[in-house]
Amino acid sequence: MINSFEKLKRSLARTKQNLLGKISRVVSRRKIDDELLEEIEEILIEADVGVKATMKLIENLKEKAKERKLTDGEQVISLLQEEIASILIRERAPTVSENDKRPVVWLIVGVNGGGKTTTIGKLATRFSSEGKKVVIAACDTFRAAAIDQIAIWAERSGVEIIKSAEGSDPAAVAFDAAKAAAARSADILLVDTAGRIHTKSNLMEELKKIKRVTAKALPDCPIYSKLIIDGSTGQNAISQVQVFTEAVGCNGIIVTKLDGTAKGGIIIAVAEELGLPVDFIGLGEGIDDLQPFDPKQFAEALLT
Ligand SMILES: Nc1nc2c(ncn2[C@@H]2O[C@H](COP(=O)(O)OP(=O)(O)O)[C@@H](O)[C@H]2O)c(=O)[nH]1
Ligand SMILES: [Mg+2]
Image (cartoon, rainbow, N blue to C red; front, side, top):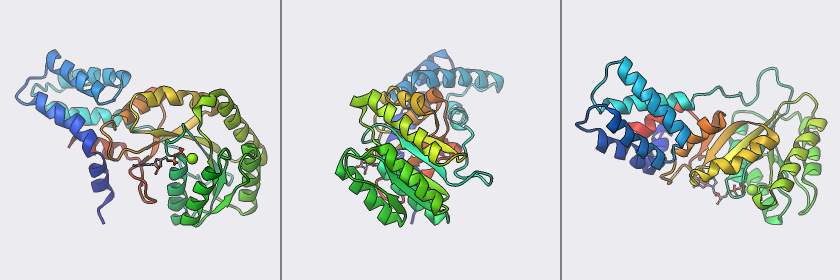
Protein backbone atom coordinates (compact mmCIF):
# COMPACT_ATOMS: atom_id res chain seq x y z
CA MET A 1 0.00 0.00 0.00
CA ILE A 2 1.35 3.41 -0.88
CA ASN A 3 0.52 6.23 1.49
CA SER A 4 -1.92 8.94 0.54
CA PHE A 5 0.71 11.57 -0.18
CA GLU A 6 2.54 9.21 -2.54
CA LYS A 7 -0.74 8.45 -4.23
CA LEU A 8 -1.48 12.17 -4.58
CA LYS A 9 1.94 12.78 -6.08
CA ARG A 10 1.53 9.95 -8.58
CA SER A 11 -1.93 11.12 -9.56
CA LEU A 12 -0.67 14.64 -10.13
CA ALA A 13 2.36 13.57 -12.16
CA ARG A 14 1.12 15.01 -15.46
CA THR A 15 -0.07 18.25 -13.94
CA LYS A 16 3.26 18.56 -12.20
CA GLN A 17 5.13 18.07 -15.46
CA ASN A 18 3.01 20.80 -16.92
CA LEU A 19 3.72 23.17 -14.05
CA LEU A 20 6.90 22.41 -12.12
CA GLY A 21 8.56 20.87 -15.17
CA LYS A 22 8.16 24.03 -17.23
CA ILE A 23 8.86 26.42 -14.36
CA SER A 24 12.06 24.60 -13.41
CA ARG A 25 13.32 25.04 -16.94
CA VAL A 26 12.74 28.80 -17.06
CA VAL A 27 14.00 29.70 -13.58
CA SER A 28 17.36 27.99 -13.75
CA ARG A 29 20.26 30.44 -13.74
CA ARG A 30 17.90 33.41 -13.94
CA LYS A 31 17.33 36.44 -11.76
CA ILE A 32 13.87 37.24 -10.45
CA ASP A 33 12.74 40.10 -12.66
CA ASP A 34 9.67 41.19 -14.63
CA GLU A 35 10.67 39.15 -17.63
CA LEU A 36 10.94 35.94 -15.62
CA LEU A 37 7.65 36.60 -13.88
CA GLU A 38 5.98 37.10 -17.23
CA GLU A 39 7.21 33.73 -18.40
CA ILE A 40 5.91 32.13 -15.22
CA GLU A 41 2.60 33.89 -15.72
CA GLU A 42 2.30 32.30 -19.13
CA ILE A 43 3.08 28.85 -17.78
CA LEU A 44 0.45 29.21 -15.05
CA ILE A 45 -2.21 30.27 -17.52
CA GLU A 46 -1.35 27.38 -19.82
CA ALA A 47 -1.55 25.01 -16.86
CA ASP A 48 -5.21 25.99 -16.29
CA VAL A 49 -4.56 27.98 -13.12
CA GLY A 50 -6.91 30.64 -14.52
CA VAL A 51 -6.36 34.34 -15.15
CA LYS A 52 -7.60 35.60 -11.81
CA ALA A 53 -5.55 33.22 -9.67
CA THR A 54 -2.51 33.67 -11.90
CA MET A 55 -2.60 37.46 -11.56
CA LYS A 56 -2.87 37.13 -7.80
CA LEU A 57 0.00 34.63 -7.66
CA ILE A 58 2.32 36.81 -9.78
CA GLU A 59 1.48 39.93 -7.78
CA ASN A 60 2.22 38.12 -4.52
CA LEU A 61 5.41 36.56 -5.88
CA LYS A 62 6.67 39.97 -6.83
CA GLU A 63 5.84 41.43 -3.44
CA LYS A 64 7.28 38.55 -1.39
CA ALA A 65 10.48 38.41 -3.45
CA LYS A 66 10.99 42.12 -2.83
CA GLU A 67 10.12 41.89 0.85
CA ARG A 68 12.48 38.98 1.44
CA LYS A 69 15.12 40.35 -0.92
CA LEU A 70 15.14 37.20 -3.02
CA THR A 71 16.89 37.44 -6.36
CA ASP A 72 17.65 33.86 -7.40
CA GLY A 73 15.11 32.56 -9.94
CA GLU A 74 15.01 29.09 -8.35
CA GLN A 75 13.58 30.60 -5.18
CA VAL A 76 10.39 31.38 -7.07
CA ILE A 77 9.36 27.74 -6.79
CA SER A 78 9.08 27.59 -3.01
CA LEU A 79 7.44 31.02 -2.98
CA LEU A 80 4.92 29.81 -5.49
CA GLN A 81 4.21 26.73 -3.40
CA GLU A 82 3.41 28.97 -0.43
CA GLU A 83 1.18 31.24 -2.47
CA ILE A 84 -0.71 28.39 -4.13
CA ALA A 85 -1.38 26.88 -0.72
CA SER A 86 -2.66 30.21 0.54
CA ILE A 87 -5.16 30.45 -2.32
CA LEU A 88 -6.34 26.92 -1.60
CA ILE A 89 -6.67 27.31 2.16
CA ARG A 90 -10.24 28.09 3.06
CA GLU A 91 -12.21 27.04 6.04
CA ARG A 92 -14.18 23.87 5.42
CA ALA A 93 -17.48 23.07 7.04
CA PRO A 94 -17.07 19.85 9.07
CA THR A 95 -19.00 16.89 7.68
CA VAL A 96 -21.16 16.58 10.75
CA SER A 97 -20.72 18.90 13.73
CA GLU A 98 -21.40 18.04 17.33
CA ASN A 99 -24.43 20.33 17.51
CA ASP A 100 -25.90 19.65 14.08
CA LYS A 101 -29.33 18.20 14.04
CA ARG A 102 -29.09 14.85 12.23
CA PRO A 103 -29.15 13.87 9.50
CA VAL A 104 -26.92 16.38 7.81
CA VAL A 105 -27.73 16.49 4.11
CA TRP A 106 -25.16 16.64 1.34
CA LEU A 107 -26.83 17.54 -1.94
CA ILE A 108 -24.38 16.48 -4.64
CA VAL A 109 -24.67 18.63 -7.77
CA GLY A 110 -22.75 19.20 -10.99
CA VAL A 111 -22.79 18.54 -14.72
CA ASN A 112 -23.41 15.14 -16.23
CA GLY A 113 -20.41 12.83 -16.21
CA GLY A 114 -18.51 14.90 -13.67
CA GLY A 115 -18.40 12.11 -11.12
CA LYS A 116 -21.36 12.76 -8.79
CA THR A 117 -22.56 9.20 -8.48
CA THR A 118 -19.08 7.74 -8.16
CA THR A 119 -18.18 10.31 -5.52
CA ILE A 120 -21.29 9.46 -3.51
CA GLY A 121 -20.18 5.82 -3.55
CA LYS A 122 -16.76 6.82 -2.27
CA LEU A 123 -18.18 9.21 0.36
CA ALA A 124 -20.66 6.61 1.60
CA THR A 125 -17.82 4.15 2.09
CA ARG A 126 -15.63 6.69 3.85
CA PHE A 127 -18.34 8.02 6.15
CA SER A 128 -19.52 4.51 7.07
CA SER A 129 -15.98 3.46 7.89
CA GLU A 130 -15.82 6.47 10.22
CA GLY A 131 -18.82 5.01 12.04
CA LYS A 132 -21.41 7.37 10.59
CA LYS A 133 -24.77 6.05 9.55
CA VAL A 134 -25.33 6.95 5.90
CA VAL A 135 -28.40 6.91 3.68
CA ILE A 136 -28.34 7.57 -0.06
CA ALA A 137 -31.15 9.20 -2.04
CA ALA A 138 -31.24 8.22 -5.72
CA CYS A 139 -32.65 11.46 -7.14
CA ASP A 140 -31.30 11.11 -10.66
CA THR A 141 -34.45 9.39 -11.84
CA PHE A 142 -34.15 10.31 -15.50
CA ARG A 143 -32.63 7.02 -16.63
CA ALA A 144 -32.99 3.54 -15.14
CA ALA A 145 -29.24 3.07 -15.61
CA ALA A 146 -28.54 5.99 -13.29
CA ILE A 147 -30.67 4.40 -10.56
CA ASP A 148 -28.93 1.03 -11.05
CA GLN A 149 -25.52 2.69 -10.91
CA ILE A 150 -26.11 4.39 -7.56
CA ALA A 151 -27.74 1.21 -6.22
CA ILE A 152 -24.56 -0.73 -7.00
CA TRP A 153 -22.48 1.85 -5.14
CA ALA A 154 -24.85 1.65 -2.17
CA GLU A 155 -24.45 -2.10 -2.08
CA ARG A 156 -20.67 -1.89 -2.34
CA SER A 157 -20.47 0.56 0.49
CA GLY A 158 -23.09 -1.30 2.52
CA VAL A 159 -25.42 1.63 3.05
CA GLU A 160 -29.12 1.96 2.63
CA ILE A 161 -30.54 3.55 -0.51
CA ILE A 162 -33.94 5.09 -1.12
CA LYS A 163 -34.94 4.93 -4.77
CA SER A 164 -37.95 4.95 -6.99
CA ALA A 165 -38.86 3.99 -10.55
CA GLU A 166 -37.34 5.66 -13.58
CA GLY A 167 -39.13 8.90 -14.40
CA SER A 168 -40.47 9.51 -10.92
CA ASP A 169 -40.26 12.95 -9.32
CA PRO A 170 -36.76 13.45 -7.89
CA ALA A 171 -38.11 15.73 -5.17
CA ALA A 172 -40.51 13.00 -4.03
CA VAL A 173 -37.59 10.58 -3.76
CA ALA A 174 -35.66 13.19 -1.78
CA PHE A 175 -38.61 13.63 0.57
CA ASP A 176 -38.95 9.89 1.18
CA ALA A 177 -35.22 9.53 1.67
CA ALA A 178 -35.15 12.43 4.12
CA LYS A 179 -37.94 10.88 6.17
CA ALA A 180 -36.26 7.46 6.05
CA ALA A 181 -32.92 8.92 7.10
CA ALA A 182 -34.54 10.67 10.06
CA ALA A 183 -36.46 7.54 11.06
CA ARG A 184 -33.26 5.51 11.06
CA SER A 185 -31.31 8.19 12.97
CA ALA A 186 -28.84 8.53 10.11
CA ASP A 187 -25.95 10.97 10.49
CA ILE A 188 -25.79 11.90 6.88
CA LEU A 189 -28.00 11.76 3.81
CA LEU A 190 -26.20 11.82 0.46
CA VAL A 191 -28.44 12.99 -2.37
CA ASP A 192 -27.49 11.98 -5.91
CA THR A 193 -28.88 14.32 -8.56
CA ALA A 194 -29.08 14.62 -12.33
CA GLY A 195 -26.77 16.91 -14.27
CA ARG A 196 -28.14 17.23 -17.77
CA ILE A 197 -27.07 20.73 -18.58
CA HIS A 198 -29.03 21.05 -21.83
CA THR A 199 -32.15 21.39 -19.77
CA LYS A 200 -30.36 23.94 -17.64
CA SER A 201 -33.27 25.94 -16.28
CA ASN A 202 -35.36 22.83 -15.65
CA LEU A 203 -32.45 21.18 -13.92
CA MET A 204 -31.88 24.18 -11.68
CA GLU A 205 -35.58 24.33 -10.79
CA GLU A 206 -35.46 20.60 -10.06
CA LEU A 207 -32.45 21.02 -7.76
CA LYS A 208 -34.04 23.93 -5.94
CA LYS A 209 -37.17 21.87 -5.45
CA ILE A 210 -35.18 18.91 -4.11
CA LYS A 211 -33.53 21.24 -1.63
CA ARG A 212 -36.79 22.87 -0.62
CA VAL A 213 -38.61 19.59 -0.12
CA THR A 214 -35.70 18.10 1.83
CA ALA A 215 -35.64 21.12 4.11
CA LYS A 216 -39.34 20.69 4.72
CA ALA A 217 -38.89 17.01 5.61
CA LEU A 218 -35.94 17.78 7.87
CA PRO A 219 -36.53 21.09 9.62
CA ASP A 220 -33.38 22.46 11.29
CA CYS A 221 -31.07 19.87 9.71
CA PRO A 222 -28.21 21.47 7.80
CA ILE A 223 -28.35 21.03 4.02
CA TYR A 224 -25.05 21.50 2.26
CA SER A 225 -24.80 21.58 -1.50
CA LYS A 226 -21.52 20.19 -2.74
CA LEU A 227 -20.40 20.96 -6.23
CA ILE A 228 -18.67 18.26 -8.23
CA ILE A 229 -16.17 19.57 -10.73
CA ASP A 230 -14.47 17.43 -13.35
CA GLY A 231 -10.80 18.33 -12.94
CA SER A 232 -9.92 17.10 -16.40
CA THR A 233 -12.08 19.58 -18.32
CA GLY A 234 -9.96 22.70 -17.86
CA GLN A 235 -11.29 26.25 -17.81
CA ASN A 236 -14.77 25.34 -19.10
CA ALA A 237 -15.40 23.71 -15.78
CA ILE A 238 -15.82 27.04 -14.05
CA SER A 239 -18.41 28.69 -16.28
CA GLN A 240 -20.34 25.41 -16.37
CA VAL A 241 -20.72 25.26 -12.64
CA GLN A 242 -21.43 28.83 -11.65
CA VAL A 243 -25.09 28.26 -12.45
CA PHE A 244 -25.21 25.54 -9.77
CA THR A 245 -23.82 27.79 -7.07
CA GLU A 246 -26.42 30.39 -8.01
CA ALA A 247 -29.25 27.87 -7.83
CA VAL A 248 -28.44 25.97 -4.63
CA GLY A 249 -25.71 27.95 -2.86
CA CYS A 250 -22.84 25.48 -2.60
CA ASN A 251 -20.58 25.51 0.45
CA GLY A 252 -17.88 23.19 -0.82
CA ILE A 253 -16.34 21.65 -3.90
CA ILE A 254 -15.19 18.18 -4.79
CA VAL A 255 -12.79 18.05 -7.72
CA THR A 256 -12.75 14.69 -9.49
CA LYS A 257 -10.53 13.00 -12.07
CA LEU A 258 -7.31 14.67 -10.99
CA ASP A 259 -5.57 11.40 -11.77
CA GLY A 260 -4.00 11.27 -15.18
CA THR A 261 -4.86 14.80 -16.28
CA ALA A 262 -2.39 17.59 -17.03
CA LYS A 263 -5.07 20.15 -16.18
CA GLY A 264 -5.01 19.78 -12.41
CA GLY A 265 -4.09 23.46 -12.07
CA ILE A 266 -7.84 24.00 -12.48
CA ILE A 267 -8.27 23.38 -8.76
CA ILE A 268 -6.44 26.65 -8.05
CA ALA A 269 -8.62 28.51 -10.56
CA VAL A 270 -11.75 26.98 -9.09
CA ALA A 271 -10.85 27.88 -5.49
CA GLU A 272 -10.11 31.45 -6.49
CA GLU A 273 -13.03 32.00 -8.87
CA LEU A 274 -15.72 30.35 -6.79
CA GLY A 275 -14.31 31.36 -3.43
CA LEU A 276 -15.28 27.99 -1.96
CA PRO A 277 -13.23 25.42 -0.08
CA VAL A 278 -12.34 22.11 -1.71
CA ASP A 279 -13.59 19.32 0.55
CA PHE A 280 -12.35 16.24 -1.29
CA ILE A 281 -10.50 15.28 -4.44
CA GLY A 282 -11.08 12.28 -6.68
CA LEU A 283 -8.00 10.38 -7.79
CA GLY A 284 -9.50 7.43 -9.65
CA GLU A 285 -12.58 5.34 -10.29
CA GLY A 286 -12.21 3.02 -7.30
CA ILE A 287 -13.99 3.14 -3.97
CA ASP A 288 -10.83 4.28 -2.14
CA ASP A 289 -9.84 6.91 -4.68
CA LEU A 290 -11.10 9.89 -2.73
CA GLN A 291 -8.97 12.02 -0.42
CA PRO A 292 -9.85 14.80 1.96
CA PHE A 293 -8.27 17.87 0.44
CA ASP A 294 -5.14 19.17 2.13
CA PRO A 295 -4.06 22.48 0.52
CA LYS A 296 -0.50 22.45 1.81
CA GLN A 297 0.07 18.87 0.79
CA PHE A 298 -1.45 19.53 -2.60
CA ALA A 299 0.86 22.51 -3.24
CA GLU A 300 3.79 20.43 -2.10
CA ALA A 301 2.84 17.52 -4.35
CA LEU A 302 2.65 19.92 -7.28
CA LEU A 303 5.88 21.77 -6.75
CA THR A 304 8.46 19.53 -5.17
N1 LIG B 1 -10.26 8.65 -13.43
C1 LIG B 1 -11.31 9.02 -12.70
N2 LIG B 1 -12.56 8.76 -13.14
C2 LIG B 1 -13.60 9.14 -12.38
C3 LIG B 1 -13.42 9.82 -11.14
N3 LIG B 1 -14.66 10.09 -10.64
C4 LIG B 1 -15.54 9.59 -11.52
N4 LIG B 1 -14.92 9.02 -12.57
C5 LIG B 1 -15.52 8.39 -13.76
O1 LIG B 1 -16.27 9.36 -14.47
C6 LIG B 1 -17.39 8.76 -15.10
C7 LIG B 1 -18.66 9.51 -14.76
O2 LIG B 1 -18.90 9.37 -13.37
P1 LIG B 1 -20.35 9.44 -12.72
O3 LIG B 1 -20.16 9.27 -11.27
O4 LIG B 1 -21.28 8.53 -13.40
O5 LIG B 1 -20.74 10.95 -13.06
P2 LIG B 1 -22.15 11.71 -12.83
O6 LIG B 1 -22.82 11.75 -14.16
O7 LIG B 1 -21.77 13.09 -12.38
O8 LIG B 1 -22.90 10.96 -11.80
C8 LIG B 1 -17.41 7.31 -14.65
O9 LIG B 1 -16.85 6.51 -15.66
C9 LIG B 1 -16.51 7.31 -13.41
O10 LIG B 1 -15.87 6.07 -13.22
C10 LIG B 1 -12.07 10.10 -10.69
O11 LIG B 1 -11.80 10.71 -9.65
N5 LIG B 1 -11.07 9.68 -11.52
MG1 LIG C 1 -24.81 10.18 -11.88
